[in-house]
Image (tube, rainbow, N blue to C red):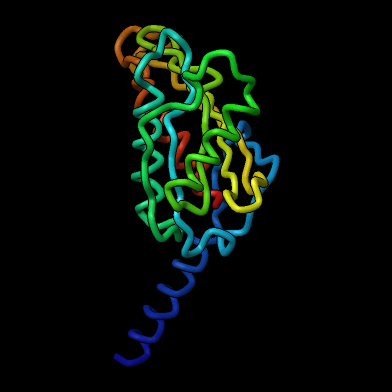
Length: 192
């Protein structure tokens, strides 16, 4: 009886060990241009700004900021995660660098260590056509004004009819773009 228990336990260890060796699916569109170690942000406070959004996706920048806040609160090592509702991208007559520095100054004035800025480089709503979301994200250290993390990620999801032999998009609609945006942000922020 002890022998059978030992054999089952050994089989369980082998099974769980082999399960962890399975290759993970990676997204080829996930690119990190400047990555920081997770320890670099441990105990820091971050201020999340609304994302820059295309004109046809009004309101999605606020939604992305809220998604980032939820993801970062869920355990990325940050001490405080705040969301600022005034978008630096709405400032007229300023260059992109001036807008970024204004966001950094705002983060410093509010007492945050890091600011998170992002933009949708693509945001396509899909129904019969594929949904596609592309995001660029940057974390800037407020004290040094140096970008500590810069990356981008994109995903596309097309609907299809699983019962029809040809690739039609008649039955199963594409994933909503909002849901796809959250998935893209989880993958990108998961690299922190």
